[in-house]
Image (cartoon, helix red, strand yellow):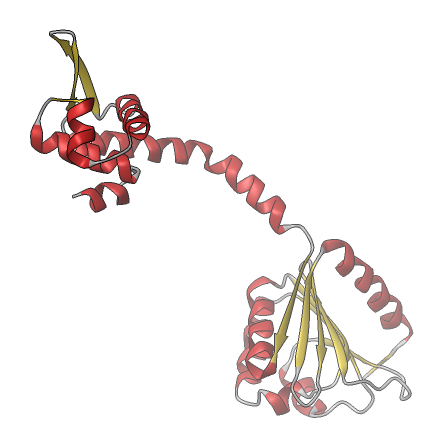
Amino acid sequence: MSKILEELGLSQNESKIYSYLLASGSSTAGEIINKIKIHRRNTYDALARLIDKGLLSETIQDNKRYYEATSPEYLISLLQEKFEVAQHELPSLMSVYEKSKSRQQVKVLQGVAGMRACWEDMVRNANYLYLLGATGLQYEYLRVYTPKWVKALNEKKIDMKVLWNSDAKHLDYFLKEWNVKSKKLPSNFITRTQIFLYSNKSAIVIWSKEPLAILIESKEITEGFKKYFQFIWKISRRI
């Protein structure tokens, strides 16, 4: 029984004392200490907390203080009260949570599985998508997944712009299937590193032997990258 009571929010000592009093009826603090072997100070502390929670009552008989458990049905009222408090405080708690999320965060995603996790984050969160230095190599590393990703982004109908490397792979496929505005970078601008910008996130993707993505969640950093992108977009040629 004590374990169940602990799951319902009572401490270990509170659970032992309440369980004992449910079974024994009225008892003095001395009887409780002798029976369940809890330190005297801890026993009195637990008794006081149980009284505050409404789970114990106390009476004085023949100059002795007796403790008695209230009905277990009161546990439901206690839990309901906690639930109502949680509901009332939820908006302010969510506000604190959202503020903490807005702080700068950096994640490193490795391998093909890491790349896929990065692409899926784009599908879930992108309200626009800009890509600088597109290589087309994604299609080689994620040949089965890429068409699904392209389709999902097309269905979002968001603003998407891509600056392609002059040596980009599978360009015919992407230009046909992906509904994006495309421009090509100068021929001397060739890199296996590309930068995805979406929402308040910047994903720096490096197509090395084991691909690597550095996902930065920061409005300030993403806005800075967007300025670079918009400047290069203006001076690049349309495909």
